[in-house]
Length: 287
Image 1 (cartoon, rainbow, N blue to C red):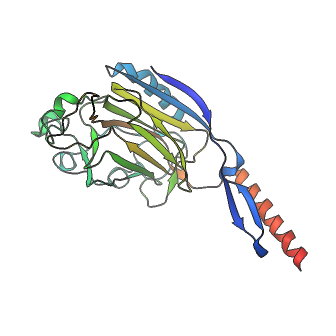
Image 2 (image 1 turned 120 degrees about the vertical axis):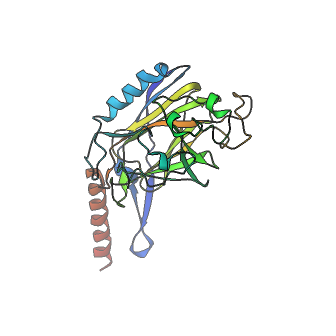
């Protein structure tokens, strides 16, 4: 069933060493609690998740053009369909394609060997990753025709945010993905990390031939998203088992909030200023 709920993140505490061994505790993430809003749904058709996809888009704001530089607000999207044949199956997709060739502020990484975008019917290559295993053409469906996306030799990948078209790290306030053929609960997931590389939680996509999961936050705190697609990597001879044991899942549309430059929140400045005052008082007492 589609889900929409709000939760809160627990504050974390960092400790900074002070003169003479004293310790000053400051709340990480500016002492504010960042609320989460989750849009999720799964079903047999693309229409069954359209409401959740549209709601998530509305939460993130206006769709921005695929140009370099940050717009500061709004959202970016990747639907893979504009990727040229030269970077589609059977060829690999460069990890930085969507920050260099088409600047949208994301760079991919994986413990596998790379990334692939599926072929189109006009390319002469089997569609929907049928070039990897012939059964995949019938296993996977597209939310936005005709291309799909996957990591190669792994079912895990990371999406890191940058100011579009640059090597400057950035933060986003939300990320969502459409998945194809999620058979098992609690296998396909998004894990979010903040600027200090601390996990903000793991969220699971609901089962469905078409599945969507999107999580947004009240401010831009996400530096990286880890995507786990099913429990098995695509490979020749590794057919999907429809939830029996082996669950193969690929990705379609990515929808995410505009990557913005890393700027501390006002509350963070206040906490740091308070810390400096405490340090100054400690030093004055020792003088």
